[in-house]
Length: 468
Ligand SMILES: Cc1cc2nc3c(=O)[nH]c(=O)nc-3n(C[C@H](O)[C@H](O)[C@H](O)COP(=O)(O)OP(=O)(O)OC[C@H]3O[C@@H](n4cnc5c(N)ncnc54)[C@H](O)[C@@H]3O)c2cc1C
Image 1 (cartoon, protein in one colour):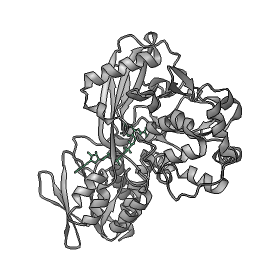
Image 2 (cartoon, protein in one colour):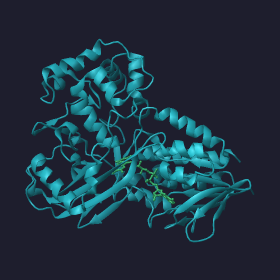
Image 3 (tube, protein in one colour):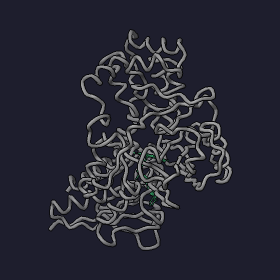
Image 4 (cartoon, helix red, strand yellow):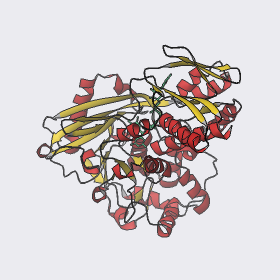
């Protein structure tokens, strides 16, 4: 029987998915796998962190994953936990945009960057008439010629400044906690790049695509666009961890370096002796991978170190329902940067998903910081809570005391795909391919969401066995 020693560095969803896939493939191939997953913190999950307190279910990090990208959902099926998933309450799919002192519903049919339904768009008070006409220019405008440009430049060019400032920027901030003028269009929203190439007009392209295939999640689909677990995202972590071999996981084990060792590798760090491995999957942040590999391949380490990360925090509040004057008839609010607030998004968590707040209560989750406002994270927790409550008074008219407050800080946790990212990742992958037995995975490379991280981790595991 073939024998393989594998070390996975990092116990976030990427490392867990990689380790789990390795166990699956080893079983299929009758390979004896000696697996060690090392994690610096005292718990698994990385940015996935669920807390249950006083009948509330608070997600410090991600609150859901995208079901449209198949990898996380497929993993849940293989784990036998698909029945634990819950869908969003799509009666309340609406998103509000805060502008000039009031909340405007994002017009029905607005797809991230552009409108697809004429009536709701024309009637919306979110845009001025010149702004609406400028967006309509997309219908007649010629194609652009850039290979890659920033998301901000793309939206400004095709749809105008209002579309960028009032919708694209705040929605993108909600996903990437990023500045759209830095983000690469091809790395973050390749669909819009391709739409322009293929159809010329973004609005027409979206409209034709909608006619061909009704949007998933709106009617009849088994799963809504975003799904989560009944007891929160940490269920995904515990489900995977429970399927790893006993003793495979080592917590509080911070890796300090990776070295070559004969035909294999040596993983240095933690309290015990170095771990010898035939293969190593580095599923930590890319700046950590850079540090760990600095003596193995300095050029690769430099490229890895060049991927920037943003920091943010979530500030969650539980309120008695009677204390919240707003109808909360949506999934939440996004706040454009032009409004100069510290909260850039607020999810109505207990409206979006069932079981997030006890009867007669609501759970609201606000985002602060991100690439455009990292300075705010220097404030301590009590200042973040006070500042966020002030803004909730303005956004939703809440003056009462919360029954629960929580702050979760995510320092350098969100990779930023700047212009040129796709090219940098290709070079990184070429360099890594020249290091047999060394594999990189995680949200830094080809997708920041949980579904992408699962794909990345599982692909790294497949490479391990492909090399056998
Ligand atoms: C606030 C927030 C909200 C988000 N919301 C969503 C959402 O709703 N849906 C979605 O799909 N995605 C969301 N994301 C993105 C998603 O959470 C992440 O992309 C994903 O969880 C990253 O997983 P990962 O395993 O690649 O990295 P991480 O979760 O960062 O895990 C990396 C792990 O490596 C460990 N590590 C680092 N250095 C070392 C070392 N030297 N030795 C050992 N271990 C080490 C770390 O401790 C960590 O546990 C959100 C992210 C944030 C920050």
